[in-house]
Image (tube, rainbow, N blue to C red; front, top):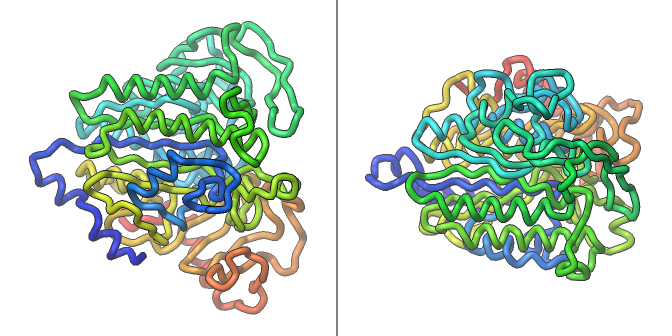
Length: 460
């Protein structure tokens, strides 16, 4: 659908701010490594039942051209909370570890600090993965400052990083709930049941993390009625280790990965059942594409990333094209599909518009209001190994050869120096037009260079 058609469906700030009604609750549900093709509302041939996500899509808007700002975990989380591409920070490739120091810069405006200034209560529940403390190696026996509560969250309960990274523990606000005094040897078989060895809290059980976080989210929503709330819910699934409970084993035709996605969908359903749909904007998305290899596709005939090229970590679309569903009963027309180009950094400007907050020039530098203007002209993509690409309309320029990520080869020698694809004619990125379109390559290169040197892509 056209952008102007989407705008007709939405009553957002400033119009809404003129009405004497309470601002909506805002709930971000961020899945971890969930693929565009895992959900049946995106891929009818998915081998995984996802009734709760599908129902949410039927009640709101399903975006088909939404992208994470990175094809891996940490940079996307930074981008969601700050509205800024993470490659502008100290982290120019890869991800943080469980003992890494805090990544978000002191004083930087975030979505929770912005909404807190507009009267919201703010909470985070789930996988943080943005570093804790300011020491080179985090000491979990000391206060975990700076951390989430220094960046606008009234409260935070979760795990430090991915569920396959030590230390394995919960932290609440700025304290570890239990010290990682025991040790796990880790595991790497069968495929997907992987976690690294290292420190673990004695009572911590990896298989309990998804139900624990779900329960905490339901409890938070159920007890917050006095003021509008912002809840950031970054689930740790279906990232490795794939640990479906007994109830969900065998639920899919995609092995234990599919079963874990099914379990994640059930968790989403539990959270949504606690929400007031008439006064809550719900966003359901993923931090990057699925870690689903060609061997997985051959074994299960399931396409976790649909027909997009590559997988998690790659510069090709499977690495960063993500499912994105927005629902707000009475404000977003049910069953709508939007082909609007967007990036998860846009969540900041969108929340600002809904809350009636004017973003300053030094915040949300790469964030555009999905519901308003100015319109985003292009998206910058970034792979796990630091490879850049830029997408403008149907054209995608990649500055490098190879995948830039998990798919081999990650890097290839030129010539040519890059890759260019017309996604309208070639959505699978199979026909490289780099040498046939030198003028287009030059123009897109110049646009990316401008974004990088000016420190922003959103006009002031």
